Amino acid sequence: MQIMPVTQAELTGKIGIDEATTPWNNIRAGVFHLRSLYRYFDQANELDRIQLSLAAYNAGLGRMRDAQSIAEYLGHNPNSWRDVRDALPLLSKHYSTLHRQIWSEGKPKGGFFRNYRQTTGYVDNIMQFYDEYKLALN
Image (tube, rainbow, N blue to C red; front, top):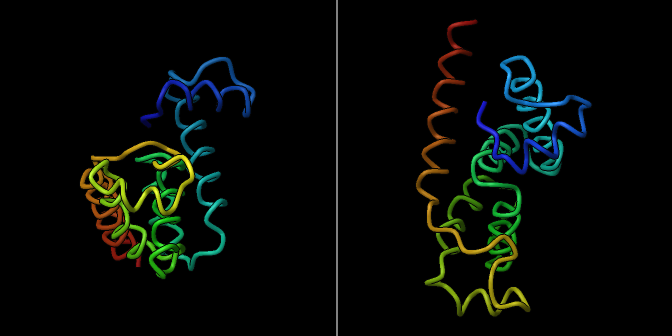
């Protein structure tokens, strides 16, 4: 599983392992991290919760929190993947006027975000595989 070095260092301490590069430890750390993200989105319905967790795994929890803040500011549901997905492009530097209305620092707490297409594509791809596996198991 792909885990950023800083996140990897945090996770090794939390789950009591020395490293997270060997396959066994890497999978343990990745599953622990994904489960932690899933627990964070406990206000969302099951499908949204899965999608929000996957997006946070890919883009980082801070960016997802920022997108939730934008969705909420715009009067949308911060626990809906569709609404949060629509807010992700608004994390780019281009929307600094909006950022100043939401955050006292004038920018998203997790920083600006340009690569929202990669995150939305990641979630779409995983969900497609998820749906195919569910069908295969029925």
